[in-house]
Amino acid sequence: MRGVPFSAVVGSEWTKLWSVRSTWWATGVFVLVVGAVGALAAASTDTADRPEVAVQTALIGFGFGQLALLVVGLLTVTAEFASGSAVSTLTAVPRRTRLLLAKTVVVVVWCLLLAVVLAALCFLAARTLTAVPGGVPPTDPAVLRTLGLQAGAAALVGVLGIALGTVLRSTAGAVMVGTALVLVLPPVLALSGPRWAERLAQALPMVRVGQDAFFSVPTSWPVGMAVVAAWAVGAWVLGAVLHERRDV
Image 1 (cartoon, rainbow, N blue to C red):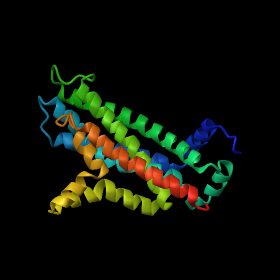
Image 2 (cartoon, rainbow, N blue to C red):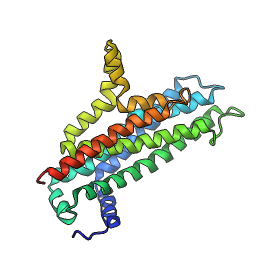
Image 3 (tube, rainbow, N blue to C red):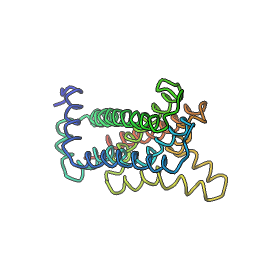
Image 4 (cartoon, rainbow, N blue to C red):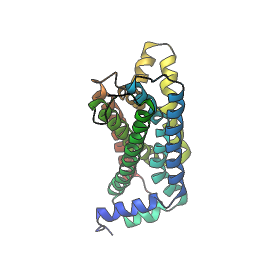
């Protein structure tokens, strides 16, 4: 069993990802939230003669929808422990870090593909609705950076979901912690008053992407993505270490 090729492990994980309804539900929620929030924001914002603002507004739903991608990531781990199939999986692939890496590859590929396609569609929709002659072209560096940031952030959120699922091994617990990190703690800390709380909020993962994905901050996006990557990779490494040390 130890001789199972890595490509075969990835293929098996890809099949398992799409054999459960939760993946389809979470993907549908992501698409719905991104589209609905973007449409509502565009309807309530004057973007006439401001194509840059139109693009930003169309992509604003990514910050809320990415919670669904986090759920996709964590369920690739927690669903197996909930059903008891983790034992058979570990019997077939006893090298646990290798198995976790295969799960990560599958989730990252799917999150990247989904985010790239959806971000491009949102951009094209915003560009069509504004219909400003000489507006921002698709090849504009700011546009490419923004779309790339959203895709990269989506992939990292998926990795964070895998990490939380591996550390906690509980769907409910991982969802609660992930929701706190992505949606709850940032506004609570930012509005609490003390400067230390505001600085702590700035260190949370999705806050940085939410700021740096916009056209108005062209020089700080590497810092923002580095913060998100540090959270995702750090949590993943912790999960891998704990996964190796546990009995099951």
